Image 1 (cartoon, one colour):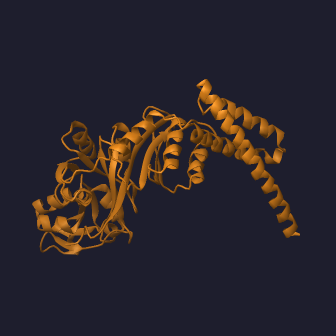
Image 2: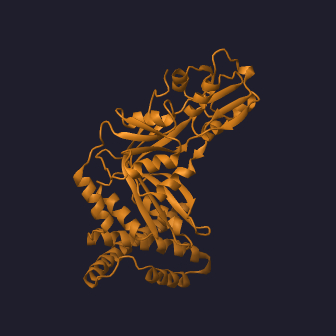
Image 3: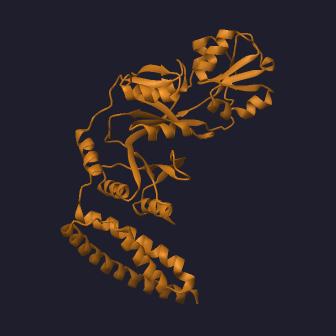
Amino acid sequence: MLEQERKEIDAIDEELVRLFARRMAVVERVAKVKQQAGLPVFQPEREQQVIARRMAQAPEALRGYTAGLFTSLMDLSRDYQRAQLKRETPLEQTLRAAMQEEKTLPASPVVACLGVEGAFSQLAALEMFPGAQCRFCPSFSEVARAVQTGEAQFGVLPVENSAAGSITENYDLLTQHRFYIAKATAVEIEQCLLGVPGARLEEIKTVLSHKQGLMQTADFIRSIGAAPVERSNTAVAAQEVAARGDRTQAAVASRQAAKLYGLTVLRHGIQSSEINRTRFVAISPSLYIPHNAGKISVVFSLPHVTGSLYRTLARFSYEGLNLTKIESRPIPGKNFEYFFFLDFEGNLRKEETLRMLCGFAEETERFAFLGNYEETLARDVTAP
């Protein structure tokens, strides 16, 4: 019985494929008419009318499914029209020009990063730019300002931790400034408890660190009965503990910070998660698209229309592109409206990926291309 039903489905599917090919042939002719008339590919009112008519024709129990089917057909049809027209948008022209220029990252740039010597941001900067001249800043906003004013060629910002989650303030900085992501790295973070020489673990009453460091080691700090105290940076916390010389104070920071400031590692590997990585990005006012780029980042907003986010994410599936991150942040001055940050694997030198991205940009309310860049996994950066 089941075999018979499957045979009938197969026959219907074969007919659907023939009808789909016939429909796309008409779509191609429509694209040429639009080109001659100077009409845009995306005509949302027309699409909504078509979907509404098809829903009305469907049995009541299938109307929602019918809407899904024809919504997908509309998305595929638009992409196919753009492929036939080969009409370059301003974004496409910018991206093609950057790929043709093939600028290479400088070997020894000035790189702004948070904190003082020994900070994890410095480790990330040196992983991405081994000859970097680090310019230390007291806050993430100052890192962005240094890049904006030209005091630094690049800035290093952490954007997410595998255990503690996203660093939302830095996503906000990416929307406030017109920066590109030039490179990224995921750093293996080993958090250590650092005390003054001679201090014992049972003496520790307060633990200083950046809020991310405190979040990543909250279970350990709680287990020793100490009070967490927030500081602007892990290395700044280590520097302060060393300067005070108080045996009851400790810092959560790297082993490098212990060596730099003459502290003792009371306990290493105190992070709650066995796998503890922080992803850092290098921001720049200049656009670099290297040949070995493997990650693409964009930010956009969507209209308050049912299914808009679903349709956005579905098109990546059509192209076989793997989404690696989606993050939402409130749009300043708007009630319950959001920017979406999206990371996916891809290289814009692949024509299909470039076409999809540029078509996607045309259909969103606000869109910014953040970069197509190389991302590495830093190893042994916490070794003594």
